[in-house]
Length: 431
Ligand SMILES: NC(=O)C1=CN([C@@H]2O[C@H](COP(=O)(O)OP(=O)(O)OC[C@H]3O[C@@H](n4cnc5c(N)ncnc54)[C@H](O)[C@@H]3O)[C@@H](O)[C@H]2O)C=CC1
Ligand SMILES: O=C(O)[C@H]1O[C@H](OP(=O)(O)OP(=O)(O)OC[C@H]2O[C@@H](n3ccc(=O)[nH]c3=O)[C@H](O)[C@@H]2O)[C@H](O)[C@@H](O)[C@@H]1O
Image (tube, rainbow, N blue to C red; front, side, top):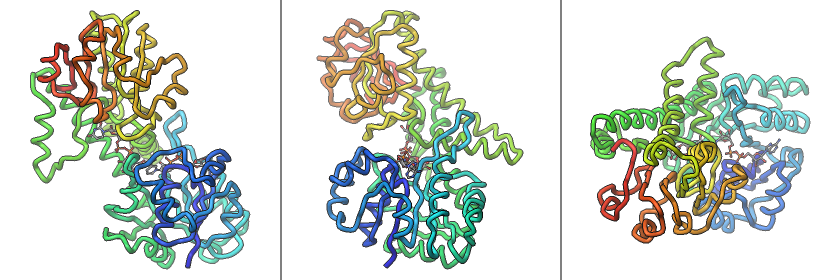
């Protein structure tokens, strides 16, 4: 049976892939440069929280090893998955530094034929770069190694579920045999296995994320129009989604898309298009609308407070980029909080899971572990993440703690009728 190395094995994708492949019965070596993450993992502790991950790990732990020795992981495996990060550079292009680092180590340590599977989201040109690195060490494609792209479609917060129940598995390669061997790893899943070229697989991954982002910006654009004409976007989007051709997903208007992926991949796609002489004005518009959306939330809060944020006390509920995760990376809430603070507001925030990470990002941000505490003396409250728990807060107790009555619900979580009845001045998005 194949033994599998996962490089970047302590990241969101790497760890879930490692645990998931172990659950499919494979022996896995999860290798990562982060000494801290590997040290904790050896004790069965992980820095990321994903529903079901710990249980799945406990069930399969005899099949998983953790190491910081990337070279050893390469030597000891017949299939190498690369799941390192591809963060955005300042200009929006994907930073391939981590990919280059691991490709160099693979090239140095490759001792016999292995299949190298890239799981990270990587732009066109990356596979040629990896081939060049391997060639530089005298490694010959087809003899010493073959390359496969197996893009990942999991969502944070539902990562284990998405790994175990993929809607499709995409295998891109120019080598049929290598592609089939990787496809076989996943052949217990009921979903379709798609074999295609590497370039198609790359465009499938970027296309999927760009389309999800476009839906979000599209519904936010409609919301902006609804707001002005006096319609309710929640009703409009709900009924639009009943048409099977449109579908219900990603039609929730609100604060805009955030997180480490949709925005990054959309920017990378725009840059990639530019490198191939195409100016994608449509996709640039999607990004622009997303930035506008965040600004419009700040404007709503300001307007409701007589057009000034200076010395106004604003309580913030939610910092994570979406509910069910503590991840605040590229969270719209973080940008909004920074803008409020820069405009002179006194901000205190609460997130069920993201407080610690947010505090590291915004040093001057006051945090509380108690949602009622942030309302104390507040002129306005803003809901910036759609945590379901917020729906069940005692809103009467909250308004009694406040000095004002403004509630900006940037994620359209609450029912305006119920909340207004409590005495709030409810302000949603597109309704
Ligand atoms: N987070 C997500 O939900 C999804 C991410 N992706 C893609 O998967 C890739 C990984 O994303 P995440 O898991 O979120 O990133 P991450 O930042 O959580 O994990 C990357 C891991 O790689 C490690 N690393 C960095 N340099 C290394 C090196 N030279 N050798 C070994 N390990 C190294 C880091 O310590 C870290 O643990 C990205 O390309 C991303 O776009 C794709 C689908 C979903
Ligand atoms: O490539 C990736 O990294 C992943 O990116 C997204 O997953 P994720 O970033 O975890 O989050 P989503 O659940 O897709 O949400 C993205 C953002 O859109 C926002 N959103 C989503 C849906 C919606 O209707 N409205 C809306 O504003 C969310 O609040 C969040 O900020 C994709 O959904 C995954 O398929 C993909 O694998």
